[in-house]
Length: 332
Image (cartoon, rainbow, N blue to C red):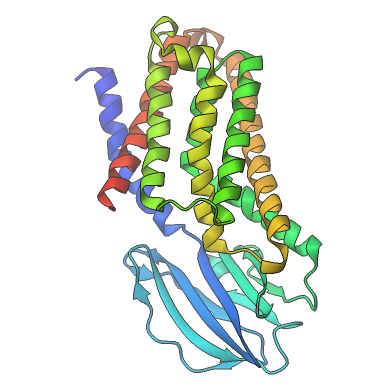
C-alpha cells in the first residue's frame, strides 16, 4: 500500500467517530411558546448520546408548575418531548436553568416568549447553564443574543469552515482572496435573508448535499497542479465562491429557522445573526493565516513544497467532505 493510499484509509477510519461525536454534541433546544393567560407550551429536545437522551433537564422559574412530561421520542437525531406549564405572573424575573448542562460539552438554545409573538433566544453553555428572564427584553438583548448564535453556528459548522479553508489554500493571491471571501460573504447573506424571510424555500436535505459537493470541488482543484486547474476557478475565484456562497447561505438559513426569529425584531435579529456568522468566519480566517505564518517560520523547507502540502490538505478535506456527502445522501 502506498503512503497516499494508507493516508486515505486512515482518514476514512477516523471519519465515522468524528461524525458520531458531532451528533453527540448537537445543542439542546428548549422552547417556551406563550399560549395566552399564564400558560406556556414547553418543547424540550435533548441530544442523542449513545442511543439515549443526554442527561440534561430544564428547570423553569419557581412560579411555574407542570405535569410530568411524557417520555421523549427519538426523531432520528435527538429526543423530544412537549408539555404545558402554568406560570402565574409570567416568566419575567424568573430563572431558567438546564440542570446537568455543566457536566457536558454541549450548549442549549432557549427560545422563550414573554407574550405571544414576542420571542427572544438565549444560548446557555456548560459554564453558564442558567439565566434570569429580563423584565423587558430590548433591542440590545436581541442583538447580542443573535450575534452570539451566529458566531457559535459558524465555528461549530465544520463543513462551512472546511470550504473557507480550501478557499484560503486555493487562492494564494491576497487581492483575489479578498474578493473571493467578500463574494462568499455577499452571496450567503443574500440567500440567508431570502430564505429566512420566506422568499426562497428549498428542502434542506439536497442543500446540505450540495454544500458538501462544493467542498469536494475545491479539494479536487486543490489537488491539481496550478496549470491544470479549472480556468474559471483560477481566473475568477470570486465568481466560484459567490455561486457556492448562495448555497451555503441556505444552510445558514436552515439553522436560523430552527432557532426562530422574534416577530417584532426580525430585521435586527437577521442582521445580528449575519454579523455573528461573519465575525466567526473572520476569526477562523485569522487563526488559519496566523498558524500558516508560524508554520512557514518553523518548517520552511517542508512547506515550500506547495504541491505536496496542497495534496495532503486536499485529500484530507475532500475525503471528509465526500464522507459527509454519502452520509447525507443516505439520510434521504
